[in-house]
Structure formats: structure tokens, C-alpha cells
Image (cartoon, rainbow, N blue to C red; front, side, top):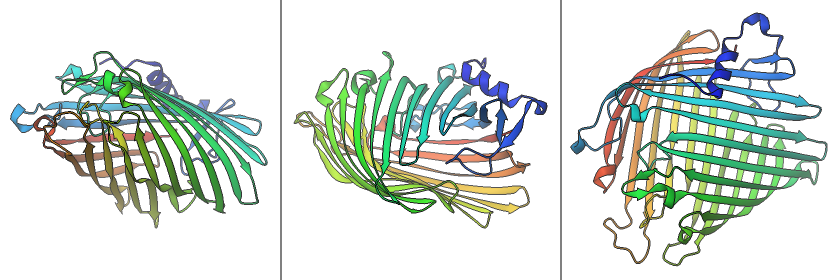
Length: 410
């Protein structure tokens, strides 16, 4: 496979820049993580990284059931990425360019070059602050936990926020965003046209109230409205009312990330599609103890759209727990566990082969890593994944094992 594309070229150029070209290393911009070197080159701050992952064997390339004789192949992925910041007075212009280059030895249909571009602007003024961001993802991958085929699609996301300080530690704001999902014309799965079922635009507006508990901790209350409009199947159109309360931790805090719990009222415009009234959650937290143990927790509960016409959406509930422990010197060990439940909702007026079905996805694995300096890690990984489903074609088991090499910074 020939490595091409503007993202790969840019990241490769920066990673191979000689040390003499570095003017100076500066601390990270506000809100970025510590411990990662930044290259200051002219007016730009850069953080390049590159990773070689899963260089090894995939025992079930197509996530097929045992009855279809799962295919085995040698595979690897290369991910060059560059974070870029440009200070402009009291504001920041930032961006990320990233490409995932996926290679399979025998099965050329699974090879892919997935590109992602992000640009954002941050203006933290005295009493008001503004932020805007746009992301374009052009990819051929497995979308979520439901679809087990790599399908070409383009996602574009635009959002912005405005916030004003009401009191010394309280801030009131408004945020809005729009996402457009566009699958290729030949994107099919399970006998369904994924383009017809999932091409859509999502528009959301929220009011926010933020209270700064400490310089590194914020409480956030948010309420808003979302409209989902489907391009080729308007019978799927729906509105949602949402409310959530949560906490945000600065990257400099002992605990990093955010956690939110909330409530969503999902109201399809067509009476044949059932609504949903229930709790939601989104958690992404990490904690480092004594500089040698890192614990991570991710959890999600929310509605996800399905490619199936007769079961148009499901409630996804589940998450990932991971722990990395420094054993001795540069050697560490990591373990991870993912559990996901997909609870489907039936469309009225259609015959259901499996009514109100619930699928379960389980993944567990671990790695042994060796650190070379502060920025390079070499590891051997093993991951096992299963999916239990009443649908035979979506029941599978697979193992991936191989070597990964990650390099962050210059």
C-alpha cells in the first residue's frame, strides 16, 4: 500500500524534521495536557505524533460467525497526527490533522486511508468567551458497534459556544451545533441501503450554566433541543429534548476528563416509531496514582440510529475500564475490558423476526509495554472480542494480537 494523502505527508514531514530546525520548546497552550513536548516553529506550536498499531494477526477479518469460516490475515495500522496552534493576540487558532492508514495483506477490500481535519478558534476575553470548531471526517470504517463492515462515509461537524460571566464564579452560555452524515451510494449492510437509512443532519441548541468550583473543576448544567432530519427516509425524522448535569476537570487536575448524567425525551415524528424517555450518561475520566498507575473509565448511555428499517434505533449502554501499571523501570502492563449492550426498539406495523432484541458486545485484552525515553513506547497487545446476537450473521468471535509502536513529540 502506498502511503499518500496530505495528512500523512504533513505528519511525516514534521516527525522527520531535524532537531536544528526547532527554535524552542514551549509549554502547551491553555487547556492542553502536560508532559507532552511542543515544537515552536515560527508562529506555530506543533505537537506531532505517529503510531504503528495492531501489527499482527486478525483471526476474524470480517467479523463473521463460525459457520462462515472466519478469515485470518496479517494487518497493521499507521496513524500520523499533528496538533497545531497559532496564537493571535488573546485568542487561539488550533487544528488537528490525522490519517489512519489501515493495511491487510490478503484482503485488499479492507485496506483504507481515513482522513480527519479539525480547526477551531478560542477567544477567552475578560467577561465573555467565544469558541468555534469544525471537523471533517472522510473514512471507510466500522461505524459504532452495530455495523461490522467498513463503509465509506463523510461526517462534517460544526459547533460554537458563547459564554458570559454572570458572577465571580458563574457563567451563562449558549451553544449550537450541526452534524451531517453522508454514506456512499454503494454502502450496504445486511441487505439494507445504509445510505438510505442513515444519511441525516442533526441540529442542536443548548443553554448552559457553569460554576467554577476550583480553578481546575467546573460544574455544568445544560438543557437543549435537537432535531434529526433524514435525507432519504423522512419517516425517521425525530426531535429530542435533553437535560444534563456534570463536572469537567482540567487536564492539569488530579482527575482528568468529564462526567455527565442526564435525561432525554426522544420524539419521532412518525407514529410507527416508538419514543424514548429515559436516562443518559457520558463519562470519560482518567486518574494517575503515584505516577505509576493510570486508571481510565469511559461510559455511554444514549440513543444510536440503526441501519435496519424495522428496528430504527437502539439504546446503547456500556463502557470501558482500563488500567496501566508501571512494573519496573521502563516496563509496564495494561489491561482493558469493554462491555456494551444494544437494546433495539421495534417499529410498529412490521413483522419482527427478533422482537425487542438485545445484543451484547464484549472485548477484553492487555499489553506489555517498554518505554524508550519519554515519548516512545513499544508494546505487545492481545485483544479478544465477541458479539452475542439472535441474528446469526451478527454473532462472531475474534482475536487480534500484535505489536504497537507509539511516538509522541520531538
